[in-house]
Image (tube, rainbow, N blue to C red; front, side, top):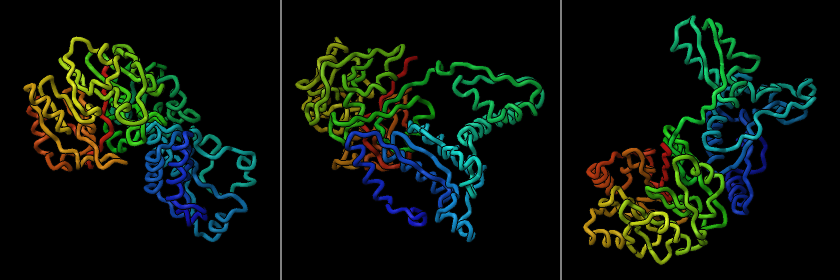
Length: 432
């Protein structure tokens, strides 16, 4: 598609440049165009997913237009290129916009800026241009939602629709199109502003590098926020929550360097946040100061490196020393007496204390930049379920692990049907 469009770069060039930008500490913005020569809706969706995978902070979405004096004009005049219709562009862009919003990529522009030449038709020959293109896209997104109301409610009667203040104009629609649609079905239609943010969902903090299907699974029941950091610890674990957070019944101990955009989401009513004394260091063992496991009875960690705030925040526990600093990476506590470990030293110490421990070999766990990850680093706990970033069928002990979890009183929830991927744990905070 890049070759057909006469671009002088390849996909590999984009990947390399994106990595260099992020490694230099800059925000990454990637622009995408739909409807280029050789493009299809399916290819455009794959492009959007790749932009997310590359770690873009922001993006622009431009439907392709045929402008005077361009090579595309020649293809169009010869009948070798057919641009999208306005409706096709609106429908595809709505899907892409929602995908970006779900993955916290800021969409800073949708549609080409309506210059004087475009509005007056001096430059534009063909293509899906509209001076309020983004408004059309938001109108279409809401139109699909509201259309279900007409399916579920009989004609006539009155309907009152709560909408957050920021979405009110989109719900009513461009030129009130959505309101007019509903008025053809209902006797009376009224939108009213309501702050819907009070609806409590659990907050989930995960590595931004988590595979997209797993992210989407989490979003089906939780408010998900993606952690990333630059220049604090080494790249492989830079987005791992267990590097910056230690969780126990009383609350959370957070490293001072926890990114502020993550801190604001865990500092909410019902969740106690304690400040750590010092930041993780760039290399091990200093990078593992917060990587402890806290149960109602024990603090399990390499106590030589434990940040003192963890001992202070979770008093009255037995302090169990293990040699492995990355304890949370290697240990999942299903209860005070039942654990899954990927470190033989931790397994031995807990077994000697009379605990029930299953060893899950780590070699089959993916952790980019390392030989392998660890099974507990794929996991989190919520509402009686062990959330797993991947499918147990990809682990040689998959069925034994499943049985162990079930026998321990938990259910298994695989977030996607792919290889197990260590993301430094799935941290769930429920303020209810």
